[in-house]
Amino acid sequence: MVAGLAVVVAGVGGFHRAVPNFPGRVGSLVESFLPWVGVVVVLLLVVALVRRSGVALVALLLPVAVWVQGFGGLLLPGGEGGARELVVVQHNVSDENPDPAGTARALVAAGGDLVALEELVVPALAVYEDVLGADYPYHAVHGTVGLWSKYPIAEDQLVDIKPRAIEEGWSRGLRAVVQTPYGDVAAYVAHLPSVRLGVGGLASSLRDESAQELGELVRGEKVRAVILMGDLNSTVDDRGIAPLTSQLNVAERGFAFSFPAAFPVARIDQVLARSGTVAHIRTLPATGSDHLPVAARVTLDPLQPSGRPAP
Image 1 (cartoon, rainbow, N blue to C red):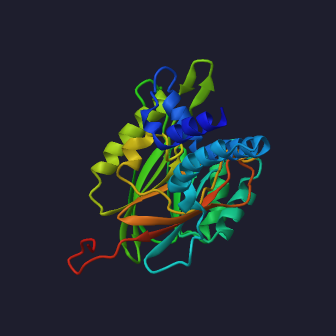
Image 2 (image 1 turned 90 degrees about the vertical axis):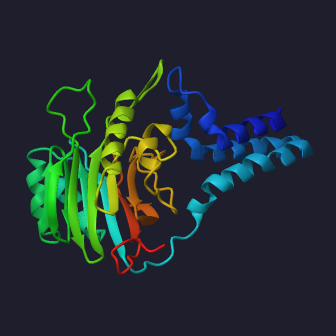
Image 3 (image 1 turned 180 degrees about the horizontal axis):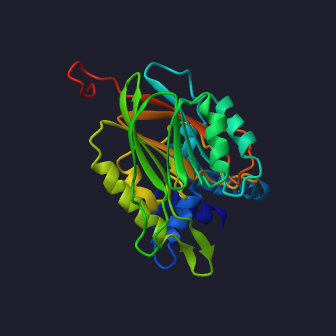
């Protein structure tokens, strides 16, 4: 029994893309909690030890190997910062945050070069602008998302990632060109539609459509280096945001489960990059939001004298 379950768990962990997404987007649901396969393995290990089953213990080596291959690297130390590095802070501050000033001060204390925020609403927006302004003299806000930067923002604009079924007035995406010491960076801030889990499964079609729209924008981006920050309402393993993860690098170190803040079980607040490496991502202390902030170190690829990425 335990040996058979071990093989099944290994199959799900190693071949999760083969899990069908219909009905109910069950494949995406499994992928949303894929790191927790490790907990299942531990429980099976306890049962195998209690039963003193040598066969089960041997069988458990398979899911252990699959988990270590997929997630073991995230446990390794992040190492020291290097050249051409930007520290990026990402936070869904919540439109019901009772302490926007305290939240803003906590984000300043993280020492990021860029700060991306979602669920910015009046009158809290003015508070964020006031508190963040002293340390981040450049900022752009479009709709309910914003970017604060220590470096000049050469241009900024609203980007349309609204699914067709959502009414006008929904505005959750922006693009800005930040003039960093390492060259221009196209910084995207996005808040993809929420997903819901019900009797019919995972309702994620709106999020998936928005991810597709955003993926097309990133694919057509002319600036070499891209950093995407946002509440994507998805883990990086979820096939629903494959239009993004297929062309952007995800974090190499750190789990950084960010939601819900009271008992985080998944990282849905993401930092992704093109022509750069997201070396490490971590959570920051809780604020007045239902999300935890995350901070990531992004190392931009070096340039050749021609201005192109080095091989």
